[in-house]
Length: 158
Image (tube, rainbow, N blue to C red; front, side, top):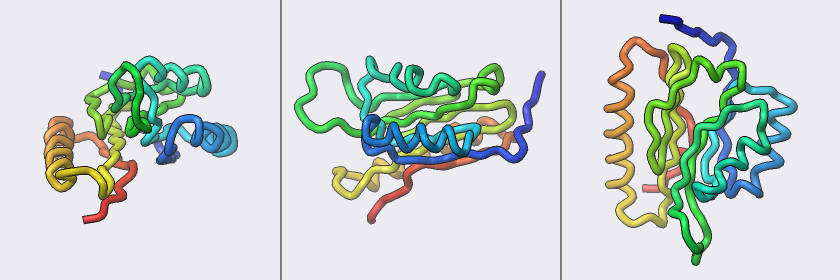
């Protein structure tokens, strides 16, 4: 089995506050810093629009999830997480788990977790956080012996 160890890996976590709003900042960071990975939160894209990552970031492989259902949008969109991995690492990548508030991608022997915790306005947010952390612990404990990196938007008010 091929094992990949990525030394001096640069990973940027960024809350986009909407794809169109965060697009230029992520593009500027990609050009200036050339990170191996981006952990992106709140892209607000529908499932049909996730291809915008591929269109705008051709040097990255996108693993993403939309927290929105398809159909007519009546309110402001919310949520969505994605991990962008540089194309030269794509053969070492495997999607482990994707959920409304987190995504896990294995890159060789490295487990990358991108988390988006609920803000204060969510009903039962403590329950949501508890379930999310329990689920993450379950997934991470399955990959014993691997290096785990957890990043994302952890802004929560209790």
